[in-house]
Structures are given as structure tokens and as C-alpha cells.
Length: 547
Ligand SMILES: CC(=O)N[C@H]1[C@@H](OP(=O)(O)OP(=O)(O)OC[C@H]2O[C@@H](n3ccc(=O)[nH]c3=O)[C@H](O)[C@@H]2O)O[C@H](CO)[C@@H](O)[C@@H]1O[C@H](C)C(=O)N[C@@H](C)C(=O)N[C@H](CCC(=O)O)C(=O)O
Ligand SMILES: Nc1ncnc2c1ncn2[C@@H]1O[C@H](COP(=O)(O)OP(=O)(O)OP(=O)(O)O)[C@@H](O)[C@H]1O
Figure 1 (cartoon, protein in one colour):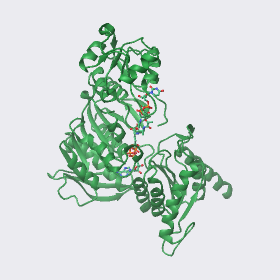
Figure 2 (spheres, rainbow, N blue to C red; figure 1 turned 180 degrees about the vertical axis):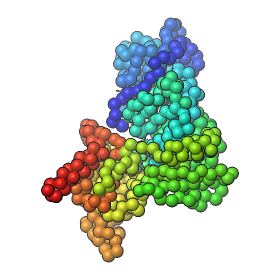
Figure 3 (tube, protein in one colour; figure 1 turned 180 degrees about the horizontal axis):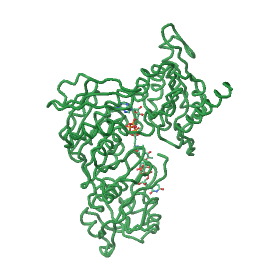
Figure 4 (spheres, rainbow, N blue to C red; figure 1 turned 60 degrees about the vertical axis):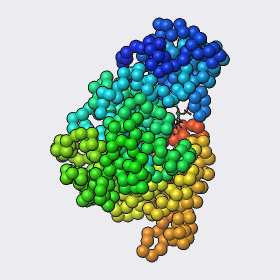
């Protein structure tokens, strides 16, 4: 959420008359005080060729769409957008009133009751429906979206396609790469990006679709070729209220408005419910066994290399593909299988996919901040696990290949789903030997108060496991410790310094992120940089002692 606001725009775009826009979308012309259609001539000669919903990225030729938001109304920024070249404004009646009150009459104002609902379709219209030139893949679910999109992109590239990518880490159009601010961009930015991809000759798109995006109409105005569902567990309840509402937001992706067909992992109950809720054709995928009756099944999973796996993806019609992924953990077999099933459901020939993967070394892509190994002695892994399920699975994935002790350094985010904090503390104790509770992104909250909530869960779990608080150990189980260290850089440094060469240190929660927000101020912090510095310091100390 903290990278700079920026976006990719096509270099050329067809001009449209504002009158055509008003007619196509049944918009009224007017301001807050004057009646609609008060000045039918206001649109004469006005042309637009691009769209923005944020004045900070507005440019010449824009239709500025001023949306009502939770903290402010976009109409307050319309003058700034007009200064940057916006030729017309589209807003709701309240926004029109705000413009009128501000005496902003430089450009025509178009009015509709719910502009957010219209934004995706308007932007797609302005840019000439760019998604229709791409084969599009959407991935939703609580965990695994980023990884799965990278793996889809990897398979598509192996097949020779020029791929585009949109998600939490970055946006890619051909060789152009931009850091992301949101997992799924706002509709105006998204359509501009799709138009850029069309211009760059990109033929496929692998994209993360968050529940926020679905609820906020960011992916309206086009239909994905294949949508995939990974899993659902507790997260984002600050926005969605409860799990059912969170599920319902994601289920919207599996309707004809958003996707032509779907692939759903049915290993959790939410996946099975998703297949019932879907109103598009859906292929089911089972990874965890018990896949009787599913369309795609993963069988014969074998640990391979230092942490990866070999597996077979089998269709009920007898087609099957044996391949590997270098990404560690059973959950990455699920991500790899979902990526493959989605590409195959899009119509790729299994023999072509097999040949492509043999040359490409399996379904493996470097995913920044996802199980990223930054050191080997001790092994240090940076991972984006920032909810209970992901943290538990990340620890379980590292346990079998850890010969020493397993350490975890993590915290919980401020201003977000508070219910998960003690549960994250508990799963850390259940999965690791050494638990170091620190800060994640406190945002506007008191970091110490967040740590206290995580610690409460960790210490309660420690007591349940060992019948004691603080440092504990029982025969036959490794000694477990729970400590609190802040700031985060100190927690990383101390843990790496204390770890033995055979140990694994998992630094969880922030993955690829490079800014930490504390009390509204962004501080530079990259877990990978901190970890490498701590490893270098440790090497220096070892040399000095050896000397
Ligand atoms: C809940 C949510 O997603 N809110 C997003 C939404 O806010 P909002 O509608 O309340 O808008 P607002 O901030 O009140 O502003 C109103 C309007 O004024 C405009 N504005 C505002 C300020 C300004 O200087 N200039 C300007 O033009 C805004 O662009 C907006 O159109 O529109 C804003 C503008 O794009 C986003 O910054 C804001 O995202 C925020 C703060 C956010 O953090 N969203 C997260 C939760 C999110 O969407 N996350 C998901 C991924 C979750 C996950 O899976 O991890 C994502 O897809 O990224
Ligand atoms: N299929 C999966 N099931 C459970 N946990 C997973 C799965 N895939 C990845 N994870 C864990 O979740 C973390 C986040 O993974 P990833 O970034 O791929 O998911 P995401 O859905 O994009 O998350 P976010 O929406 O928060 O960006 C990983 O770092 C890993 O610990």
C-alpha cells in the first residue's frame, strides 16, 4: 500500500466525444444546483481519450471520475485533475454539488447515481475493450494469489506467449515493470494498463483479484477467460464484516459477469461451497487427496531437492502430467497445480505444456518475498505469510527440511482484522521452536499494543503445550521460547545472530514490502536487506572469532 502512486498508460488512444459518452451510459449533464440537461450544449466539441479516478495520476485528455469514498469525495480533487488536463468530470449528484460550490465550471460535469459501478465499463469503452485482445486469467482466494499468478505467467511464457502480470508485488506489461500500490488496481488504472498491454503486444494476462476489488467494482467491464480459487480463511474481516460476506465477494468472480469458466481448489469447505455458488462452468481440483469425483487431482507427490516437490496432475478423462516445482511446501504444489489446471482449462494442449515445462525446469518461478531464501547458514527465509493459515503452513513447510531449530520472527498489521492476532501467536508457538514477536505494519495503531495481543495468544498456546509460561521445555519436545523484540530490524538481527548454523529463521509477514508504516509515516524497511546485513555481521563475527 505504500509504493508511489503511478500507472502505465497507452501512448495512443482513440478520442471520444463527451456527447457519445453521455448517450452510451445515459449520463445527465449538469451541476448540483442546476437541473440535469440544463445546458445541453455544454458537451459540444469536448473530447476525452483516457480516464482517471485520482487527481494525482490525471493527465491531458482525461475523463476525471470523482468517486465518493470512505474518507473523502473525489470531487474535492477535480480542480487538480482539470489543472492536469482533464476535459470532463463524471461524478454523483453530491460530487456535482461540491464542484458547483467550489465554483469549478471549467469543464462539463456528467452525473450518474453510482459512478463507481459505472467506472470499469466506462474505462473499458474509452480504451476500446482492451481485455478482448488478451487471454486473461484471474486468481482469487485468501492465500496463494501472487504465487499462482507468477506460476501461470511462468507456464504461459514457457509456452511462448508474451505475458502480462498484475498483483501485489508488481505490474508488468512486456518489459515494463511498475511496483504495485494495490493488489488489484482501481478500474481506470486497470483498463489503462490493459490498453498498454495491447499496445506492447502482450497476449496473456495473469492477474490477482482481491475481494476488495470485487466489492469495489475494480474488475467490472470485462470478462476473464479463466478464474481460479485457491482457498479461504480468516482475513480482511475489518472490511468484509464476516467470513460469509468475504466469501460472497470472492464468489462474484465465478459469475458470467466476471469469468467464462473457473477452476476451484476443493480441499477446504469454502472451495466446495464455491463450486455450488458458481454460475459459470467450474472444474474442481483436489490436491490434498480424497479427490474422488473431482475433475483434476494431484497424486504421487514426492519431496524433491532441498525443499521442492514432484507431482502428477491427473484429469478424470485420463490425461496426466508429471512435473516439479522448486517452491517449498505442500501449499505450493496446490498453487502449481492450480496454475497448470487453469492454463489447460483455457485450452492449452497437455503435450505442449509437458514439453514446455521440461525445457523450463518445471513449474517454478522466483516470487519476490514468497518463501524467498536469503541465506543458508542459518537458512533464512522471507515469506509474506500474514494471516493464521499462511503462517502455520509456512512453518509446516520448513519443518521437514530443518535439522536444527525453527525460529519465526513476525508481528501483526495495525488497523486490520484484529481477531487474527492471538491466533497468529498461537500457530507460531505450535509450529516453531523459537518465537520472536515484533512489529509488522502498525499503520495508525500503537505497535506495543498490537504486540501484546499477539503475545497473549502465543503465551496461552505455550502454556497449553508445555504447562508453563515464558521459556519452556519438556522431554521429547524441543524447548520453545517466546520473546518480544522491537523494532523489527532488531528482531531480525538478534534472531539471526542467535541461530545455529543448522537452524531455519522464518521472517514472516512483509515479504517483498519495502516500507513500514508507523503512525502515518513510511520508514524504509526490507526484511531481505535486514536479513542479509545480519548474516554479513554474523559472518564477520565468526571470522573475528576464528582469527
Ligand atoms: C477499502 C479500499 O480499498 N479503499 C480504497 C478506496 O478508498 P475510498 O473509496 O474510500 O476512497 P477515498 O480514499 O475516500 O478517496 C475518494 C476518491 O478520491 C480520490 N482521491 C483521494 C485523495 C487524493 O489526494 N486524490 C484523489 O483523487 C480517490 O482516488 C478516490 O477515488 O479507493 C482509494 C483510491 O484508490 C484506495 O486508496 C483505497 O484503498 C485503500 C486505502 C486500501 O488500503 N485498500 C486495501 C485494503 C485493498 O484494496 N487491498 C486489496 C488487497 C487485499 C489483500 O488481499 O491483501 C487490494 O486489492 O489491494
Ligand atoms: N495455496 C496456499 N495456501 C495457503 N497458504 C499459502 C498458499 N500459497 C501461499 N501461501 C502462504 O501465503 C503467503 C502469501 O502468499 P501469496 O502472496 O502467494 O498469496 P496472496 O493471496 O497473494 O496474498 P495477499 O493477497 O495477501 O497478497 C505466502 O507467503 C505463503 O506463506
